[in-house]
Image 1 (cartoon, rainbow, N blue to C red):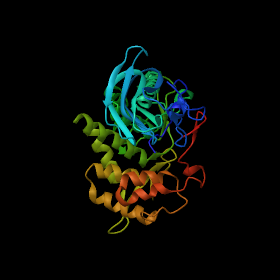
Image 2: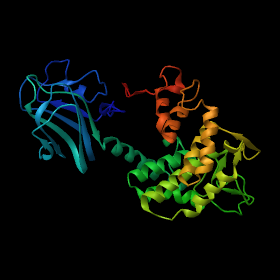
Image 3: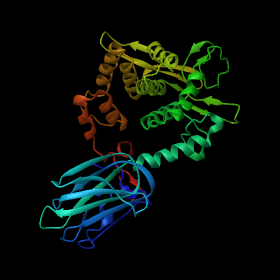
Image 4: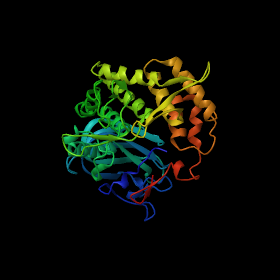
Length: 384
């Protein structure tokens, strides 16, 4: 499948066409995310399908999944006003299948697929259209609003949206990586700076969001809130998986911008993971889960999900020997590359991404064994 989220899941996006073969093959069925439905035109040349995304976005491209009735000659046009059109792509030798056409951050609101000459005796038919850049634009709008709403907290990303005032290192790390991916460097730095500056070895206040407590590196709390713009209250566990994700986000910034800006916090987080690492045997090891219950206890045990995080982070930091031992430990815990049963979904999907190769078959876990395993959900009345 091409689409993860159907275009029509966004209420503002609509499709129209020069013609429709019948009421069973409408323009809207080219953007509904259902690969069993399609748009089909009348059996004639010079037919078109036009998609209005509802606002001007920076379009990155388009993917067209043609049915067997395809045009041999067609073009893709873009417009900001549905009046003046620019040709983004033209071919006199289309052959159906799946076409991916890339733009260069083209400002657009409308995309028209102009089917000039048919390649068969039938009309022109499309299973699905995917507009690259549409989701990026919508998500970035939300990121900006969320971050600007939380200016008093240092422009962190609220994990609970506007219900709020709830910040976690894991969600901040994911948000930072998304911002870096979109080259939103300044916004990513707001978050990265916050944690990089919260590393005072002289901190003696337990509920400060600080890597240290009484001179000892312990990690950041999973949860922090800001009762006022001047104070922070952190609580819960200092889970090692969150530290690994923060480290991944700093390493991504380092790679993307060829920068040593965050070298100090990178070393601190890496050394924390190494300090919590435990050799189980000559070939296996794991990273302890970390401090729990507002630092009342230290969890000297290994957590599978957290150790996948630590494996990825240590591998990225060049600590390949310890990463290899963690991988062997995880294989022993989770039946190697076999799908096994009874695990939360991320122990399949994240492990497949982190380990690659033979582990991709973990993504074949059934979708019908409980809410922890859902690969498809309902979004705005659509299955995605």
